[in-house]
Length: 186
Ligand SMILES: *[C@@H]1O[C@H](CO)[C@@H](O)[C@H](O)[C@H]1NC(C)=O
Image (cartoon, rainbow, N blue to C red; front, side, top):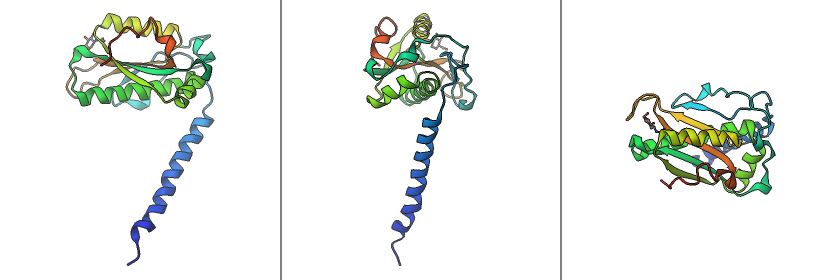
């Protein structure tokens, strides 16, 4: 018998390499879309293709961000009053991170690539009150920080429509002063 693992590995490798190239190409080819300039975003758990953009917002300050504004970070503000299990929190943070990434890819590409080139820093923090989450979201928007609010579809653990995680960024670390830097780490 010949060594079948070698024979099978190479088509798989080509497949994976192809996927990577396709995703890199789509990243490189993605064009800025000036008409879709808002940063507000509400996402529903398990409902990923319906992410339409928020209202247009002129003169977004984030359009000037670049590598010289490093360090960057992404902040995931978790609704701790929901008492979600660890796995649930992890999944919701994952949704928020992907949502923020997609938002930033459309609206803050230079900032996004600066964040990627400097290690993709992310932190998760506790957000105990709804008022605070609203205030953080409003301040973030006014500074051009991409935001993505995850609302749970309510299939597991918690009530439908619960706001589980507010994702912010990526944005230069300094931009979070007075926005979310007072929140405690998870
Ligand atoms: C957390 O979710 C609960 C239930 O939906 C909600 O009442 C509460 O305001 C939320 N907290 C935050 C910080 O959004």
